[in-house]
Length: 454
Image (cartoon, rainbow, N blue to C red):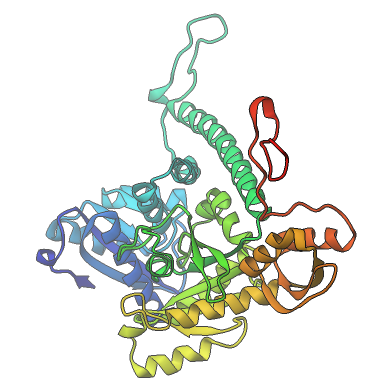
């Protein structure tokens, strides 16, 4: 058991951490999870007074932990004076109730703690709705009640025990969840409209994904000067942030910062944040940001891969950006470079603080997005050379020749521009995304043009 120095911590709710190491689980892995639970608790504002891990082959069906260990923790309550117990594993409603009765303090499992942090950090309306929906789904099976809270009716057929307060609370939660689900559906439709609008333009997009507090927001800021919130704490970013970055070839790219992943990511959060995670699903490229300065990088990398696989994104084109390289030892450099093969197209060591590797990362993003573009050959009429400018800006030109009918160009273009160029080859009048219409005059009439005599 560990007892922590209280003088080194900020004042907050005094909490004790309790973990479990079962059969087949490495103690080193459990200790790292407990370190992460410690970080989560500090992020939530708790003051950690002690921590312990029980080695037991199987969980106790009634209280998860063995009765002997529960009695030991209960005896520590007076000496350590804690009023909250945080568990590293998720508890069933029955186990949580039994532990609270045995210890006389509130019990919060890992999922409940993460939900509390999300509730503190949610800033946008969308984020608050998603967090509230996840919290209510987590709370619903954990409600308890008794007959003394019955609500009696006042008319014929309503007399008797009536509706218990427990039933009333559950009904209110279900009603609230229905309202939140309706709002989330509207938000999903709004995001779909925004993405459809972006797809009509030849913009490419890349999403930053990775473990929480890996440096995604810091990397976004140095690549785009975006001013996104970046703090050295878990889950500082909940709402997706989109910024524009210009790649070495001059092509613009939309860079999306997303919520971080973590070990044992609650299913309630995955379901509630479906609308947000769709931004990752719609990206042309994923950039996995991995913190090189901390131990256990291999485990965090596997966690991200597993989460992406659960989201159906394991087969997406992906780069590996190994951040905080200035804090990484040469031995760690060599070990982390072993991550470069599949499923990654390329890997790059970077540092947001020193700027190391940022130019190379931009080049690799440009190459990766170029792999996803379609090879096209088209003749652009001289009266529509603005389309050629658009091609140079958003695509890659490999060869161009001037002919009597126009400029014959071969190169790679994003899908939105490919449609326009295909219409040229068919003799159509495809719209030019780079063209501007002349201003309208009075009553909607087009304004004067050169040579019109007006």
